[in-house]
Amino acid sequence: MGRRALGKWDKTLDLSSHLVLWDDLPSIWSQRPMFDVSQPLEVEIGTGKGLFLKNAAIAVPERNFLGIEISRKYARFSAAKLAVNDLKNACVVHADGQRVFCEKIPADALVAVHIYFPDPWWKKRHHKRRIMTESFVGEIARTLKPRGRLHFWTDVAEVFQNALEVLANESALSGPEEVDPQEVEHDLDYRTHFERRMRLSGVEIHRAEFIKK
Ligand SMILES: C[S@@+](CC[C@H](N)C(=O)[O-])C[C@H]1O[C@@H](n2cnc3c(N)ncnc32)[C@H](O)[C@@H]1O
Image 1 (cartoon, rainbow, N blue to C red):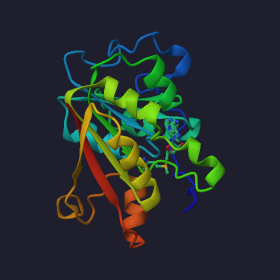
Image 2: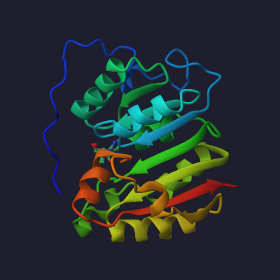
Image 3: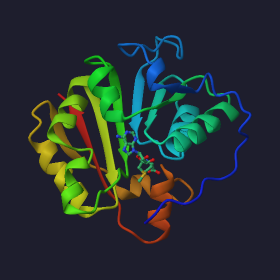
Image 4: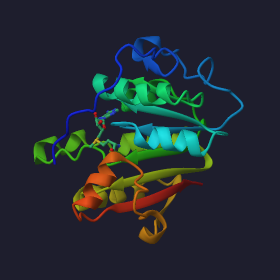
């Protein structure tokens, strides 16, 4: 399923408190100056239109939420949502999530990593571009704190199975803990835009959680 046009947003909004560019990231990620440093940090890779980031930041004000989005227009769109809601505990980095993890995020820094509906890269020759590679899963394990959680959801059964196989080889993560659909499938309670689209089209969603040992 392709992407839909973005809704209208006020392009004159000041995004300086909610959008960070790769070139402006410090050499090692620090919660300062964007966030209250005493709060635990959760990261979402592939923020898309930013529904999860906005709702999570509103629902859990005692945690910080960092979204990483490779597309400039989606990063700006999500940052605008956070700015309109004047959220002090969420921001978006416009960058490649894999680079941010490998080059910027220190070990044992995160209480949760969220990956929802990553690009499936359908063609066989493109499978190597899928996000859940052995090395990237190693980065997730490295950056999570002990007892930190990885949340992974997708509508593509093959992507889910591939990810589970890669995750099974990562000894620092235990799982999968399957997520009971009855706990997450409430009408009007969609975690992301893609979840909304897929559920409204009757597509099955595959969900798993892993915990850092
Ligand atoms: C299929 S969309 C899903 C968006 C959102 N998670 C949702 O469920 O609605 C995948 C998103 O991941 C972003 N993305 C793909 N590769 C990425 C990367 N390496 N780093 C950060 N974002 C990435 C894409 O630009 C796109 O916005």
